[in-house]
Length: 119
Length: 107
Image 1: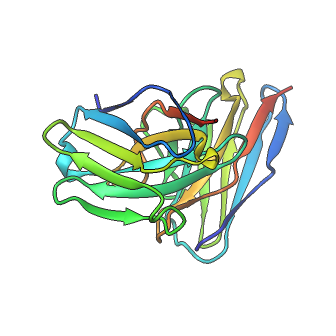
Image 2: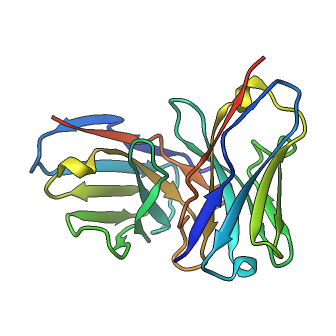
Image 3: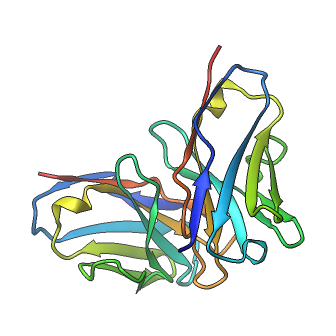
């Protein structure tokens, strides 16, 4: 069974750094794109970034370029999303999701990591 | 960026009703349209890809249609377990974008 398991909820202060994780199992992690999607409170879904673990090629939504960094460690089948300096506006639920080539979609999704940034 | 406009943003219907959700793209996306269901407290789940292909295991009361700029997700007979928010997504061009969501309530 293909499964994505994300790290637990985080409570941080503005200006702090953070790295959340998404561990994959049940498939060849290196050969599928994997990405992150943000959902702010009461808002819709926003695609943030994708990475291809085999060669670490990345694609970013321009809205998030420079704000976050996506990375992956194929030796432990884990993708990451990190911030160097959090803002209150980063408070959101973050989902990781695999992007197969066919069909072209996001499937499956991780369970979500709630990030709360508050002073 | 390709904008996706979903309508309605909220709907309330009775068990057994036929429900239709629309998704309009700001430019043609062929059939590169995906539908997801997000139940309260759960992660999104793939329902339909390629605009009209039902994911394995999804009940046949769900169906997707459309091409170009106009798409619909239909639930032929609404069930209590269909309480959820539904999102469309285009996968033809970066940045990948989602619609605003349609929250479905059971009367």
